[in-house]
Length: 471
Image (cartoon, rainbow, N blue to C red; front, side):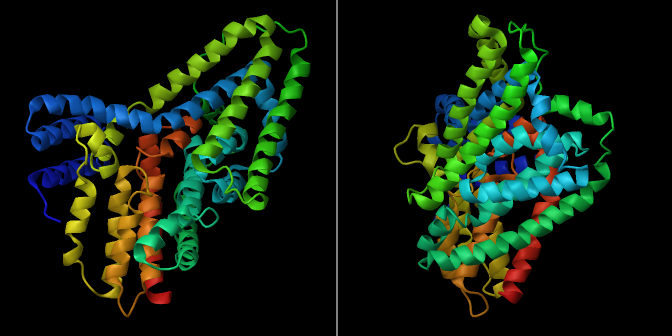
């Protein structure tokens, strides 16, 4: 593919954004400026540069709004339970298992991995963050470390293999011209290696921050989980304690039924199950009905006003916490052929990001070790669009062309898949579904990226070496 000046311009701004992130500075300014200049140069009209900024943010908002919506509904539900006092009662039984912060970290990892493997992390995150993360924080696990555990286990280890749903290995295998099951098996093994190392390294790095159960900082972290103003809603019911106990049981049971139904639907109906966005929609819908019931129990006829307050607080929190991600995502959507056409107002959009990757193919070395690391790097670069899945056809095709006597196509495709999904799925970029975890845990998404970065990169590097010499 012939590179144009606009391709190089996009590459330069991408490097500027990455370097800015390394220096722990905000990247909204360079992403907005980059979107403007690249569109201006590509279209040759400054007016198109101005309109591209708006369209890039609009496209990004449309793509990410489902995440904002699930955050809104779950936060509204949790705030209504807080009115009843059911939020504290709800997690008391779980605290018996989470005896301290260290145990809590690995409980979060295990539960997140199990649920995410079946349904993808999108519907799993609201359930886990609503039920388990508050209990973990009460046990002494810092909110940011809890977010790391959920992200590495769900967005990283479970989603990168996608062993049950098999969308990712299917995309990789189809492009590589090989068997989906072979790629899936290699991807499962590599995901466990990368995830195991990343999770153990993260625990080792952050274990000193884990506190005792009685540390006052635990209460401070609990308030940041779902930051909202103190409720002004007044209880109308005369049976507040009774309703508090009822919903402390009813809400977890309802969410458990959701999990069981999704699992049954996946394993026994043959319909493919409620996964990804469909699963998140199911969880969000159940949350809304629970919100209605709990608000009515608390406020009776005043629920007409109270529920509006809860929904409004949810939207305010979601956009205040996650709003800066939209312009960042807009810039990287501009580099993807799936979205650039809508942003630039052309029928067939350019592929700035993938074009840069494809142009490097002829310069890639032929040895097994270098081919494997080249696939990893290309996978990571394609994951910068915030999807993780959109680059899999490219990494799969490259895997077939880079096969050597020392490493087969299936292993190379699985390595590319690991790089793409661990990055864009996402654990180390902020403009991915990682914003949902940060939102529910009440932590900065950029801080979460920084906490994840070293464990994830080390895990991927070790995984690649193991793939070359032992698979």
